[in-house]
Length: 85
Image 1 (cartoon, rainbow, N blue to C red):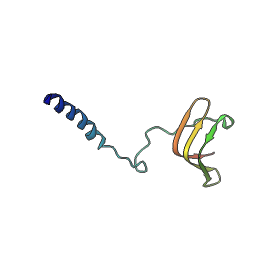
Image 2: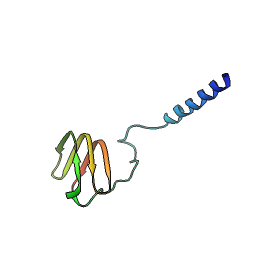
Image 3: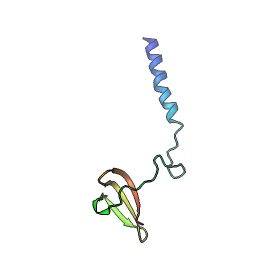
Image 4: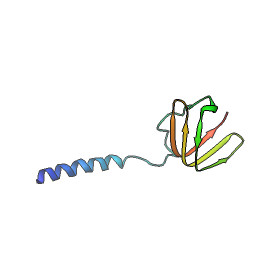
């Protein structure tokens, strides 16, 4: 029984040790996924968000339960910044 408890403790602690190496500040780290265009057809792009604001002429900041649906992709996040060009 003690061997099983010791083995379980080692397995659980190894996950904690690995998690300590992660940096949660996204502002200073590179992106996890490359930036990409979800759709060039803006008519088929569905955008849902709790709040939205226009920060510049063609920049939109969407916050709170944001989701983007295109014919090929689905993206959900707390905050999405759209740059229309």
